[in-house]
Amino acid sequence: MHFLRREATSFQFGAHRLNLVGVDYQPLHTVYLENVEKLVSQDAFNLLLSHNPDVFPVAAQKGFDLTLSGHTHGGQVNVEILGENLNIAEFFTPYTKGLYKAGSSSVYVNSGLGTIGMPIRIGAPPEITLIRLCSS
Image (tube, rainbow, N blue to C red; front, side, top):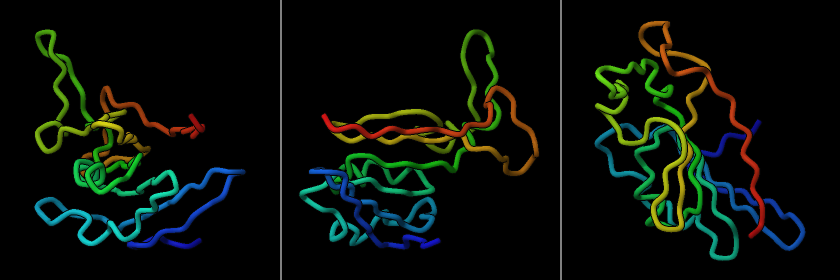
């Protein structure tokens, strides 16, 4: 297994190329994706793997077409109170689970299988996601 730590690797599928870029965990309140633009390829679909979804606005700005993230466990606890959903992760990030878009870029935040802190999940079922990339 090869870990992509501020590295890129590419795959050719017929006439299409996938540029896969990975970065280490980037904690809150750091400069996200510093100097990573040199890993973006102008003639490929650029996919970023980042544990922390908060990098998404910067990733979109730097030219990544899709970012795949996790980190939030889908909020781990989602409850409905007076008709409103309360997701604990929303106190920390706007990217808690699912698909988000900004211009032509997207991020998918996977809820994952595990937990952090308390070993409990309420209203945030475990998730394994199959993502199919197709040419447009």
